[in-house]
Image 1 (spheres, helix red, strand yellow):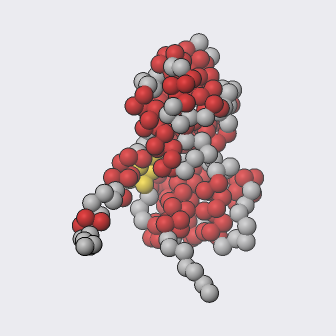
Image 2 (cartoon, helix red, strand yellow; image 1 turned 90 degrees about the vertical axis):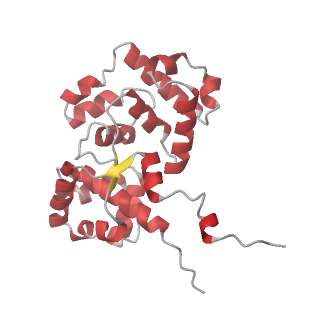
Length: 236
């Protein structure tokens, strides 16, 4: 005899959008971001339509510290949920501090699902901080370009990682991670382009959105999540 599951039973283990947002560290946009959205919306009507289509903007709200930068490194070139899974394993295995990461065995970190390259990057970051060659607090006093220049000195940290850290950690709202694939695909869909723009083309397209290009990125991510969640129509 086959028992039919009730709707409540089917949804019992389904995570709600609110729970997922909390797990990812996503929260409603700040007042500064809201001001940026208004400014962008006046310049580009396509961006003005995103929240109506995809819902109110939800953003990462991370502190500007070692743990946040380590989390960004862990998430390089991974889907959001895959990155979250590995990050949770890392946090459950080792304290996310420069000293603990520096002392942790490669095998221990690898057991969390980290690649050799990411382990090397995390250890390089730990070394730079422990030796004083990188001072995360000092980044607050630097402009965007100077802060990025300091971060990319660390092995395994490139422009994408640096821009993400500035945007979500330091709350620098003009930072545009232009080589982010989701941003490129989101912009293509938003503008109805035949192909996704290159990183350089995206920078050109978003030039007039200064000093809120980071806010534009947040909106594009929101839009990309929206179009990815829509069911695909199959035509015969």
